[in-house]
Picture 1 (cartoon, rainbow, N blue to C red):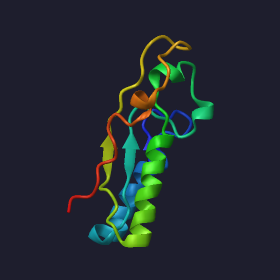
Picture 2 (picture 1 turned 135 degrees about the vertical axis):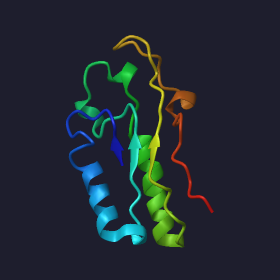
Picture 3 (picture 1 turned 60 degrees about the horizontal axis):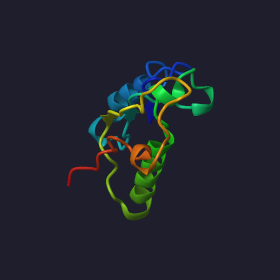
Picture 4 (picture 1 turned 90 degrees about the vertical axis):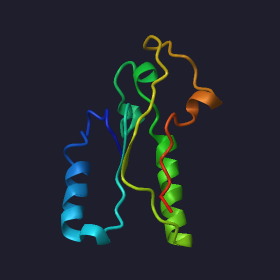
Length: 116
């Protein structure tokens, strides 16, 4: 999992190359699932000015991914496919974005489950 808007550790350095090398090395036998989230960074603490209006918290997606891994290990439920999760930031002006509510804190595009 990686936030596409991450400027501290851009997706092109660790995540995409690792995913590509894994597919070359393991091919169809790979159990790796790579999820990239738009408008998110990997560490909200180091987010740039305007985080509240331009970016979404990655933590919601991180918890979804951890639950998917747990279900895979515990009950052999297939991992979700590799995917790009498109999100919608809250908007507004930096420092005065609309508050996060139960409606806005939910992923605007949840991680898609495996096709069965």
